[in-house]
Length: 92
Image 1 (cartoon, rainbow, N blue to C red):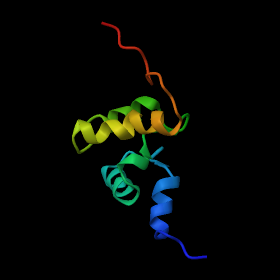
Image 2: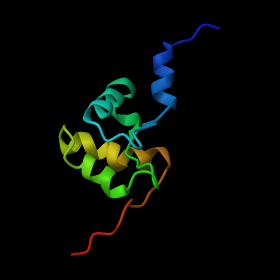
Image 3: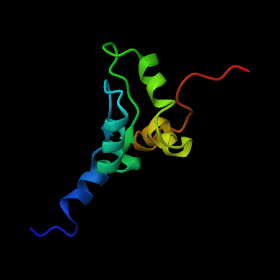
Image 4: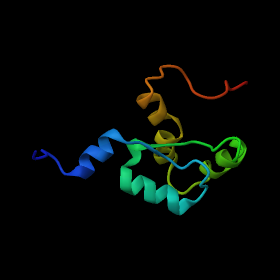
């Protein structure tokens, strides 16, 4: 069987990655470079990694907010077909 696209195309289209438990700029950028920003999701390795530790990492991570938002929530909503806001409601 001859593939119409290289194997990396199918991997990028069908596999998503998370960095659960790895709060490292280098691992974040390697994952984004290897898989593309549309296939990476924010996660925490609860109960082994507190959610606040993972959140503290992603907020100041290198890159613009526009680069962080897809990984932080938009990709998960798209992949899991979630049509409502993720996370806690913001109180004014």
